[in-house]
Length: 117
Length: 228
Ligand SMILES: [Zn+2]
Image (cartoon, rainbow over all chains, first blue to last red; front, side):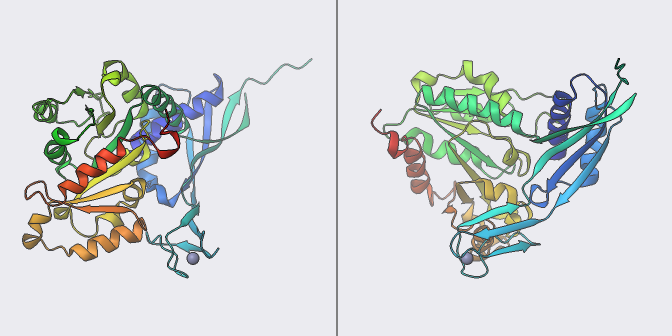
């Protein structure tokens, strides 16, 4: 259900950067640790985008896998399940290298073909 | 018309984080420390506050009540003679599932900031959305009741990872539920290694003294600025 609130954040970010131009596509980078359900996000996005510059825009979601790194022993590894202890040294000082993104990477906007003299 | 690609590279929640930082600056200016208290509906957040807020020695505490159950929780807490401010979350579609920085911002004027040292924000009962939205807090705590099952941390890692303290509540009910406390703790530690946990019961009183002391410690400014 956080997909609804996240959709609002996406639309606001895209509109800010569109500077009045209609948005036709949004490229989003979503880390798996954000627990976002892609279909749900797409559904709410279409709903929230109505009446904004993002109305009808396609939402392209790039999924980013989770990789962790241990501060203690410098090991890095990927995870499929939520297990955040270092499998090598058992340490708890673990840093998330990727997988936490929720980032608008770029947008595509429609522009009047400029009349360049 | 032609298409133009615009590079953005911006966390979609940056706007919220910016407002959260502004809230934090306002709280800091008034020397108020802020706790964001989260948890599923019915986990026992209000009861745990009710049991200790009247006994925080030397700490003037206030509550910002964001839970959707209306003023019911606020009434329970107000009977402790603690200032309670009710935050009316937007009742429109989806507006009730969490507090965000902007909602808290809108309530700042109504908070008695010069009369309190500690503000406890009781977030909306939800295990997903509140984890995403900072509100300007110093620390975050969550309440997880044993009745929610031992797999809860694995299903909601985002929330368990977002917290500085996990209170495992309603342990008096352990004989009646199919939950192994050790396994629940192991799951929490797996998701958030080393996170502080308090095993508690709002009914029996177990763990409440630790919870009370944790709140009193949270009310103290961090050591490096203790000279102010
Ligand atoms: Zn390690």
